[in-house]
Image 1: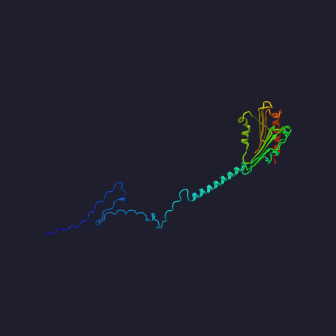
Image 2: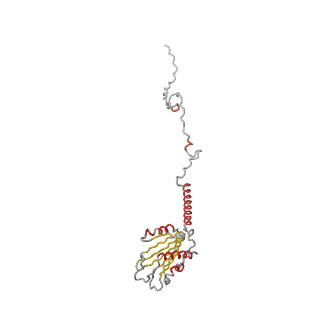
Image 3: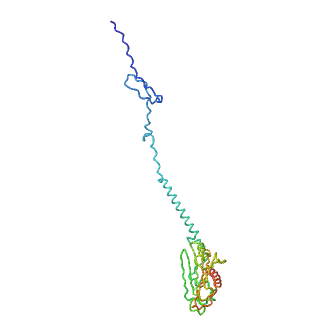
Length: 282
């Protein structure tokens, strides 16, 4: 019996490859099974990340450190610098303001006036001497010297010849405002004096200083046995103010039966105030 011819061994069958999904790219095919004598078609090797790109010390310098947070480092230095500049500018503005308003003793518009130590002898009230010739032996006087204000004050008792008691009073005061302009307050006080005090008449006076006001009151109604007469002339010249006031009070016990009229008194105030302002200039 003859031996049938041997068939050459057949090559092992390769497992069918996994069909590709229409949406799966070729480089992402799953790996082929191993263990067969003849491997199937090789898949491309997966791409590996560059180990030098992310780890320091392999030829690439480490990433630069992050800058300082806001408000530190250079930013803080600049903030301090600008704060110092701002303080310097503010100080300069403050100094300029003081200079313009007379805060350093400069800029005060005093017009050359002085406040004497004794205004009783430094002021002129000669217009009243004919009516009241007797001298006051002990007048009241005082002064104030301050970087903000120089002030001199005098109060006199006026007596007629033969009078045992005071027949009238005369007061004078000069103020040199060295720090602030007294203009607005002066105007508010004297221009509106009749509004804040009843029974007083106020009228502006021209030709004396920058502004002047005459304030008067007469409650005697022509009688010399009761009532009073009062007059004040207030003057502002620059930052210097001057007031001169007259007052007389009548009663049945007074020896003065013929006091001066209010018109006469206001005329004397104007004359003597002009003369005094000239004398007070250095």
